[in-house]
Length: 344
Image (cartoon, rainbow, N blue to C red; front, side, top):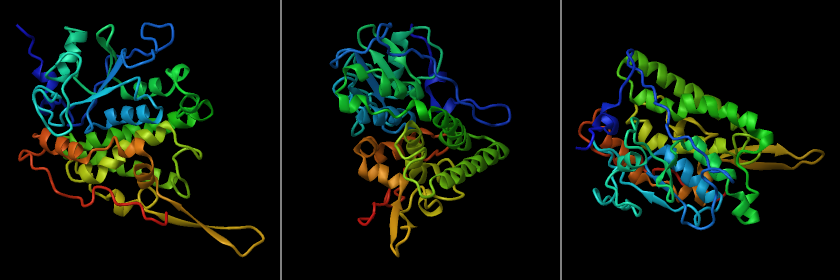
């Protein structure tokens, strides 16, 4: 008789603390891919596989990094349905939501089947992303922050030089990146969940105020800048993007993060901002345009091609029946993301 794990797979049974606040459980599989290790990098698509949801911001991080590093021919991926039910994330064999796929390796019905294949005694959440080893039939890692660093560096020896030299966690910026990641994760990435899953007003108010204080901080950081840290795209931008792109379509309404919207409340994050710069010893004035969110989405395919608003909106509004009992998915906002102006 199979073990009942519905208390681990059913998102409506997500526990909260005694004060009504939400605390995310840590990931359980924390191995790495390393040359000479248990999980070495290998050429071709016969060793590793990603299981993801387009709806999930944590999984989207890994898809963005995979695309940026040119790992498409080394690490294929499978997309689950966004309709997260009592059994967890379903594959297309159970729910044929447009864009969902069947499990090509084991014909699993749900992501939980993979976890229990890797460890029949597993006693944690059945989350995505999952980085899977097809030879050892087990999970390498299910922590997105670690997976993106694996993808960033551990396949460089077998990548073309133009992809291997791309480094989104460079040594000289790691201290700054780590510092930004720490508060962005706590107050924005996970902060929206703490707001949405709170079961008391006091816990909600603490969480939502913290979200917007952190967004204000990001807004100040992006003044006259294209990226969060230095003048280059880093891991910090990737980790923030996946939350900000979901903010207006989902978190404003569903998670009650409605003090301001990104599109109307944060010009440095969202809008096209003209910043005049005067050329010394001339009468010339040059205008530079900054638009962090929309530039990443519209001008970098790694961000746009891994963002599916149908999956995103359907997942949150349908799956969290304890928050939205009608499971009605709203039409707006229209558009989900505004276009990048042609004169940017």
